[in-house]
Each structure stands twice: as structure tokens, then as C-alpha cells.
Image 1 (spheres, protein in one colour):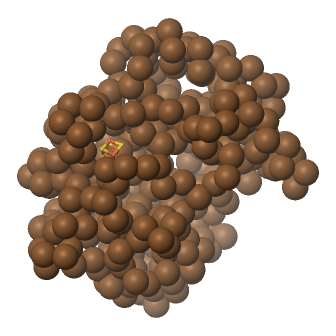
Image 2 (tube, rainbow, N blue to C red; image 1 turned 30 degrees about the vertical axis):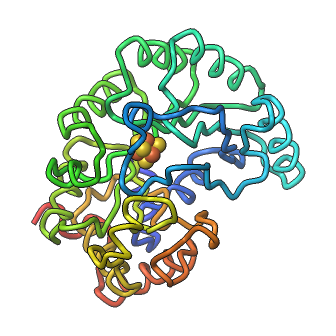
Length: 317
Ligand code: SF4
């Protein structure tokens, strides 16, 4: 589904990273936008014992987009944002089910939400944020039907790392094998996978992070969002931070790590993000440096240029 020839063309033109935004502009004859929506999903990792992942806030939904808010009905969230984006010349949309685990409901509820999102003429697909252990066959079968109808369906999969010991430290409560299964089952059905990974997780070595890049390349994830680990208020990670058990990467370390990671990744994995710039400042504890996505991308490009390198440069070494 991803057209590798377009990515090759991007490298020929001098791009050092397979940026999703550039790829989309080249591959689609219209401008697109992802509308984030909050359909009120919770998470199995919070419902069981209310602990959740160590970096996930215990309360609240730290969203910085006005209409991505459960206080508005889904229809209103979509229509208000669509109207605004259309006034800026955007023609086609994906609906991005974002906060929580967006496949954590019964089939009927999920289908109702997805059908509503896809009922708009200008919606060409969905992005669904979820966990690897929450993608049962029946849910994937519904999504596969949308793919067959011509929609572009993305699963935004919280992977974080391909190392079991780190998943346990993060209290993710799923296994690496769940991640591998989820990716393979999506690929089998032509559902696109955008994995989310975090660099700078507690106790992870450089080699382990590079190994995550290689494994995800071999599994042929279609895209990645790469994030620094951000300490926010009301998390276990915040408690670790104040006890001196975790220190966030500084900006230079993060930029170097992103470049190393990209070099070890397949050149054909699209990169959707390399920062997490939507964390409201009032809940951010660390790092202190600006997470602005464009600024970080700029710095990463400068560093790759300094190295005379690009994404995938060390993938086959
Ligand atoms: S899986 Fe996602 S929503 Fe659930 S606890 Fe972890 S970070 Fe939070």
C-alpha cells in the first residue's frame, strides 16, 4: 500500500528522512488532514488496577486540541474541525481516534463509531490509536471490510519498545509477542500500521533501541511516530523522577539518538513524527527543552546532513 517509488524519489530529491507529510503530498492529488477525536475510550491497563503505564497520567486527558474533547458529541467534534480545515483549503480527511485505547469496546459500539466517522463524503480513512493486546480478530475483520471498500485504515499502535524487560518496567501489561502478532495480523489485511516508539526509556541501552528499529523494519511497519520520554504530572514516572531514579535525555542526546535510530531503520518506513509537541506546558515536568516538532525535525535533518547520512544508511550493515 505504501508506494516505495515515491519514497525513492524523495531521497533522490535530497530528503534525508521519509517524511509522511511530504509522501502524502506527493501521493495524493488533494490536501489531507487528520481530525483527532475523543470518543471517550478508557484503557484495559487502567481499568484492571488503575495503575496503567508509568508515563500515562492517572487522571485527565491531556489534549491540546479544542474540539477533540469528550464534552462534544463525536459528530460535533468531526464537523467543527472539518469546517475549520476546509476553510484553509483542506479537501479530504482521516478521523483519528486518539485518547485512550480506541478498540477497547464491544464490536457493536466500535462499528457504530467507525461507520459514523466514515459516513462523511470527504473522509477517506481512519487512524485508530490502540494497544497491541486489544486487536482481536473480529475487530480486525470489521476494519478489513472498510479496506475492501477502498478506505485507508491505519492502526496507531503503542509499541514503545521491542524489549520485554522494558515493557515490564513500563507496566505495559502486554508482551512483545502481542506486538508482533498485531502487526502481522494488520499487514495480512492491508491495514496500515503506524507504530509509536519511545527513545530514552529507563534502562534501555543504545543497542536495544537500534534493535527495536531493525525488528520493526523486518516486520515492515508502514510508519512510525518516534517520541522522547516525557515526564508529566500525576504519573509513576514523575514519582521516579523526583526520587532521582529517572533523568530525561537532553536535547542533543535525543537528536543524536533519533538520527542513529533512523539510520538503523528501513528507508521505507514513513516517519510521521519525531517529537511530542502537544504536551501542555502546565503538566510537563521534564525535559525542559522545547518539544516543537518542526524544530526537532530541523535539528535532525541538520545532524544527518553533518553526518552525510540519511534514514536507512545503516539498515543493511
Ligand atoms: S496503554 Fe495507553 S492509555 Fe493505557 S495506560 Fe498505557 S499509555 Fe495510558
